[in-house]
Amino acid sequence: MTDRAQREFKQRRARARGRSRRGWSRLPGEGPPQDRGQPNAVVNVGWGRLIFAETFETAEDLAAVMRQEAPDERDITINVNNPHVVLAQAPEAFFLDPSHTFRLEFEHYRPRTDRMVGVYVRRLRSSADAEAVNRIYAKVGMVPVGRDFLLSHRGSRRIVHLVAVDETTEEVVGTITGVDHERVYDDPEGGSSLWCLAVDPQAPLPGIGEVLLRHLVETFQTRGLAHIDLSVMHDNAPAIKLYEKLGFQRIPLFSLKYKNPINEKLYSAPMPEAKLNPYARILINEARRRGVTVEIEDAEGGLFALSHGGRRVCCRESLSELTSAVALSRCDDKALTHRLLARHGLRVPAQHEVDDASDARAFLQKYGRIVVKPARGEQGRGISVDISDPVDMVRAIEDAEIVCDRVLLEEFCEGADLRIIVIGFKVIAAAVRIPATVIGDGVSDVRSLIDRQSRRRASATGGESRIPVDGETERCVKSAGYDFDVILPKGTSLAVRKTANLHTGGTIHDVTDQLNPHLREVAEEGARILDIPVVGFDFLVPDVAGEEYVTIEANERPGLANHEPQPTAEAFVDLLFPQTTDRFLEMKEPRNATG
Image (cartoon, rainbow, N blue to C red):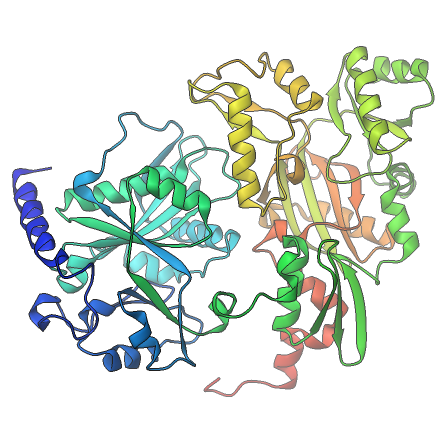
């Protein structure tokens, strides 16, 4: 920090200490106007406005501004220390946000002495960055920001948009936004605030959120500001743990919001689907948006019924009554799926059902590298990939028999694990799945790295994705030359599973726009062969943009939530209730010029 910045910092700290005797923030009307900085301060941050309560003269003035929230936006009124007074102005329209406010005094901040390997932070600077930020927002359920807004503020001193970039792939894997209160409204306390900290849930690198947070803190600290505030949901334990680790302390300030559909879940009672997993919930939300009636039959089992216009369809996640029992059985039995697809000319790997030990050894000897899997099963359970040792094969067969008494051996094929979603016999989404991977920090052993990565995957997927520490994981680690107790060198990447299933810790990356048209045709033809309206095909491909492939499996109940922001939920409800599609409604009831 320069001498001038240090002097400015001390001056602001002195002013802040003088104000702190009267409280963390002033209720509208407290203190003379000149002590509050610029009056009635509001700043647009792209997804809505930040309204600074301490700058308003009266609660009535503040309530009037809060009522001006634009459609499809999300305003937040911050730094309120007596929220009940403002709520009383319009209890039917406002609500108290169930979040805690934390503050970090920069004089207490301690920077890291080392640098995280694998990621760097910079300003948002291009359309590609803006698109990447919105992709991350979509994955974590946040409100997107207009590209033009992000680009027009890339050099702003009031609003700071930062991105974290993977050093190897140059992909944006995280983002954070900061607001400089002094530049917004001449904040006499020299404050700032943090918003929209989001990390790509598929990113394999640990600590991205901390790197972004520290970079923003240090950016504002070098400006001579005194502190940074943030708002975090009261039950977001991992985030609170990170903030407290960096020295943030909870303070008695609150946030108010205007009631709108975006934040309805924050002020209304929990819906019946609260216990549903993400795969069922995404369909429920889309159905409700269309005006389709939802009836939860069993939340834990993912069972619900959708009704509209006298039509009622029962579903279990993406499996509905439109999928016949015969079509389901064609997918459920992997050997049957293999035979049907091969009979119609689709490329499949060689396959053999285990009869005895001698024929299994003969199959392994013929192909050298094989896959062992149960004939029935899902979510990667009981599957062992790239088996080349007879002893490993016997163990893999025993593991598969726990899931199903019929065990299949398949020729191992190289390639990227590609999942293609077909709904209504049309490809809707495609994604490459990558096996669970850990990256060494030079300090932690492999077991600890797996444990931490497993917790991150569980947090990012609502508990759906975890890395099992079992015999298959141990085999994969040993095949790479390590064991659970070895310290992985800093920056070293280690795939700890061969299967890429989300439920065993794998990550999924959208490639819909890159998918070769021939692969689209193959997937749609496969759906017609199996006569199934909703299906997820697993292919192995050298290149998603090429035509080569082998078909591995067909999943009759694919997880559609894994493919956001592709419109999988929309296509599913279109299939069940075509009369509710946005396109149909627009044709029947065109909007006038004013909307």
